[in-house]
Length: 267
Image (cartoon, rainbow, N blue to C red; front, side, top):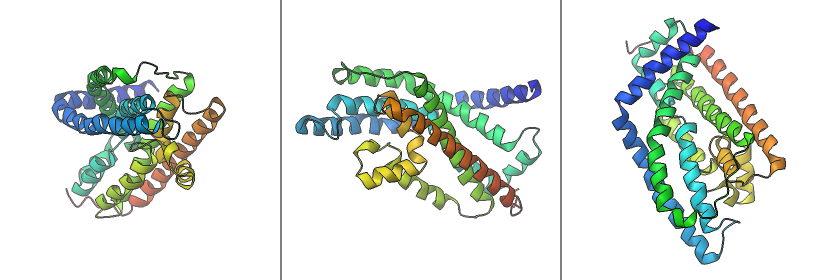
């Protein structure tokens, strides 16, 4: 076990240093989120101010929701399937097959190091946003119970395991990037990143609760801002665990099947 932990620490240190070396590019990615951070809260807050509230959300509720969503999303949301698909296509993936650590563990630590760096880069911007929106946050009421922290961790694992499962298609499909692009359509609509899932029509809300996207960022954010009733919190955590298990074994299945097709042509 100590040898495994030593390997984890080594991989984490390597990619953490790499992330620090390329922190400028990380800042550029973070800045792209500012479009959402500036526009969406103002649009919904103005609409709620005119109509009183929308779906139980006041102007303050919308601003609080989007700010929390952006902060949690910096840690939770994983996009590592793009890098993995490129490495598989170019043949660099062959190195992973001879490393003294499993590819799944290696990729998880690699992804985790970047998510921590990205969250750190976004933190001061988040403080600035709180200052700019301070007029809306006077009555902010957040829930920091254990369910929130567990949901954030599980949300990260749901996102990571699901995109890892998608990345395994690159072992079998030459042009996998179009599949990844398609992934973002339901992800944006059903994860709560464009608007709270509770504002969707009943049929769409029911659909969101079936698929894994809501359990990445939507559920932890609603947990944090107190939009999930205490009686419903355990079922949300269970649903997150179920999707982690499904995606994990799905990735394992596709890994075993995909290795039979992989040829490392790009080397």
